[in-house]
Length: 464
Image (cartoon, rainbow, N blue to C red; front, top):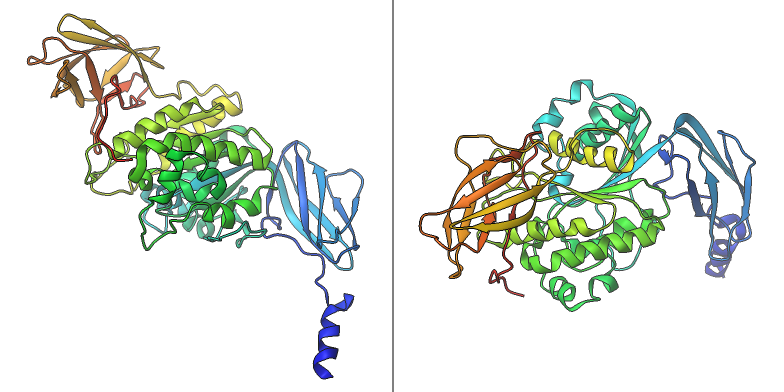
């Protein structure tokens, strides 16, 4: 009898949960300016919830569904604050010190995840003067799940020496540049997992949609530091925040997908398309090309970089090149991240916010012309010409019809480069920095490194 009474008490309305919110909605957060933002949560079925924002407008009321969920949509003003939001039902929640500004997701694997506390030297130098009340951080706790989740773990924090120490250094420098230039509050959501595969960041059904992406998903190596099942990081870390309005995404990942580089281009398209669909916004997506590192293979990383370059065919996307930002080719984690974040911010400021930031795109191979025993290469994004950072240009190779590449000599002529080799009299193809750990020295006059490339499409011998 006592057990029956206890069970009935559990079912009584008084025993049900009070109105509650997901972790991403909290005091100190930043909401996307001039947007329709969703405020949502849980309560008793049929309970009446009223949401009031201190920036004005009428309170909005809604009745909780029979699934014990509710949501309302608020129109945010121009950047500013601080504001409060009150959620009133049988109980009351007041979210305080809310700013309105620009919100960006910072995602990827370890090079996005790396922090000042994890050894990022230029982020360590920021710690003494890090306090900035107009930059707010939300670091999502690592969570993998077999089905989409409705909540995450984490909380909003104001940027200071304590919160910065354990936040994405790339994300911080990106956000700091935006905040200094735009003079609006910046919210940064760190959604990263070291060693993670792209296949785990998109819905499993999407990852398995095409033969090439299905092969990648089914052949992810098993490692002790991250899961290798498609979709599980999407389920645990992405799905719970897709109702939270954002401006865009920055992404630094790709090293782990060396196992199937040919699939990476398609995977990137699928991930961006699926995320944009889930957020119901065609947001910008700016990403970092993986840095040189001495791997075991010759072309695996080069092929990933090539796939990343091709992924710039995604609308509203852009890529940062990092071939010049490596201090140790035997360290997969370059310890300087400030310039990476600044270059990402250059893309965002120019393309998303219409700011005049000068040249922000790396020179990119456009075309080639055979001229006797030489090949002349032309480049986009080099309006003022090219420069070498040392006397002899490095990382050029040239091949004839036998497809055997030889180390080449190269000479800059304006925004073109002539390439030749004594033992290749009838050249047909050129490669530049097309290996795992290149050390190129070809830049635009503005100091941005040329994107690695090859003019051929010959089989690289990578297994699929």
